[in-house]
Amino acid sequence: MLGKFKESVKDFSENVKSAVAEKELDEDTLDPLLEELRLKLLQNNVSLDAAESIESNLKQELQGEKVKRGTAEEKVNEAVRQTLMDLLDDSFDLDQALEKAEHPPTVFFIGFNGSGKTTSLSKVADYLQQQGEDVVMGAGDTFRAASIEQLEEHGDNLGVDVISHEYESDPAAVAYDTVEHADKEDKIALVDTAGRSHADKNLMDELQKMVRVNDPDITFLVVDALSGNDVLEQAEAYEGMFDAVIVTKMDVDENGGAIISISEKSGKPVAFIGTGQGYKDLENFDKESFIDQILD
Ligand SMILES: Nc1nc2c(ncn2[C@@H]2O[C@H](COP(=O)(O)OP(=O)(O)O)[C@@H](O)[C@H]2O)c(=O)[nH]1
Ligand SMILES: [Mg+2]
Image 1 (spheres, rainbow, N blue to C red):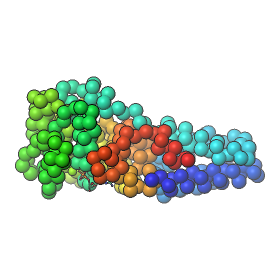
Image 2: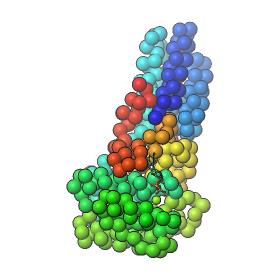
Image 3: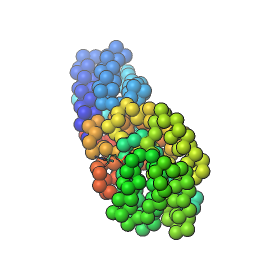
Image 4: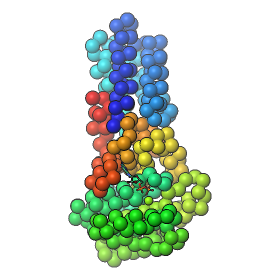
């Protein structure tokens, strides 16, 4: 994970170092180096907007700086670190958010097909159970073949009740019943939804209705780290509908670009990263350790 990104930053500071040997960091020196860094960020699936924002921050930090040979790398790393610290948000705290929630606390998982909604929901269910909380899962994906059975299997594995209706039935009603069950039994309601894209007008309307009827306390947008630049389309499709992001498949991603892109685009915190297919493969997103991995 993040190997390629690290290389980009290394190359950039190497370039700065050799430029410094000749002259100070004026615009003419810095611009081509920044452009090279930008290209490398883009190759690592960092979105153009995010790459440009990083670039302009670095320019502000570094331009006119007199950096002694030997300290250039430190200086650049510090500038990249500061830029990423400002860009990334890891302030979301699930336990706190649940404490503040209405009763029963209701959590929705939304996102494109295959992004990892059902898996992440099950991981969160497991996490909450470990914390001593009772949870119920709602099979709100009534659209995709086998989705209900998939959630029921997770329910069996975890010993968690699953509320489900028929395929093709109204997912708002499934969510409603899940919340009602949670209310009666003093549980947290975790509601799955069907994958949607801009193109699926009906499914998008259905999701809006689900949200309207059930007014979730927390909605997670689940995106797949491998989807690269497509995360922008996903952030757009669900704009205004989510509170925090879960980025899955970080175990198979090479560069971490998706986290940077979605953060820049949405301005929302990244709550968790998915690091595998098992229930325990869910980590709180910690921006400092993420940045450490890039810069080490
Ligand atoms: N390697 C890896 N696979 C994941 C992760 N999260 C989900 N998956 C896999 O991605 C596929 C799609 O996940 P699923 O939860 O069904 O996606 P959904 O369509 O959004 O509900 C499944 O095969 C999951 O096991 C993750 O963090 N790492
Ligand atoms: Mg699913």
